[in-house]
Image (cartoon, rainbow, N blue to C red; front, top):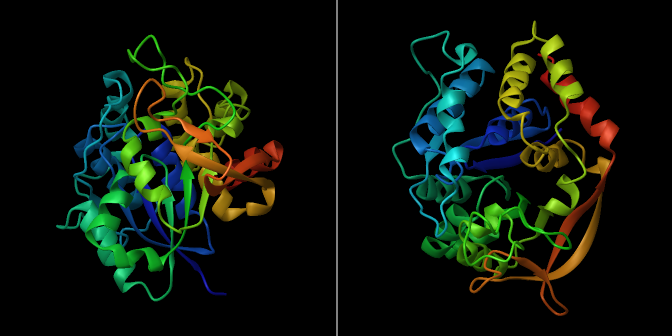
Length: 307
């Protein structure tokens, strides 16, 4: 069976590592590489943790690249420091050496190279801002034809955003963080003809990370991947935390779990609503994950990580 070619672009949040772990368990996926965008993280520990995870899972031939792009509105320090914590987890530091290669090229240039050299169009699995994708498209517009589709965790269509007005002055609360970090780059990707499948807050708000599920991961602790997933989610369980990136990534493994809805949209790049993904008649058509079989999804990730 022909495998789907995928390039991962994540931004180093706790669930970005877990989304990468889930992607690595998918038998019908050929992962061509992982790009780390320096948004919801400090990039050096995020790159290190990513390489250690790939080592742990036995895929050390898969290269990792560090993007050097910058956004407009930085993620809070409290969010970004989790990259240091994950990088220091004992389960990721049983060896003093990392085998998974860190490529010399910048992440945006590595993305261009992978797309140019791919034998067929590639799916971009993006769980952070779209900045690295936008920069790559600006540098090499011809790669648009090599992108099969973008599956993206981002946006909020008919619900409020998760950028809090109390923390971000001059924001009306309509933006989701992966758009807000760099709305101009999101708007650049919106100008393409690439198929976009979004996993917006409209769906993720209904799929929480629960204590019950984290306990179940812990009870599978004789499986190192499930143990690591449980440890990572334990870090964030005191706050309201949802299956953002993991839910988006699971679509590649089981799209039949999901219902999609088509929307006409635009990205707001200025003013109080900067970072909003707005539904507007005549706007750019995208598909959004609208519903998911929650039990099937929960069962799936527990099963996949039991290794």
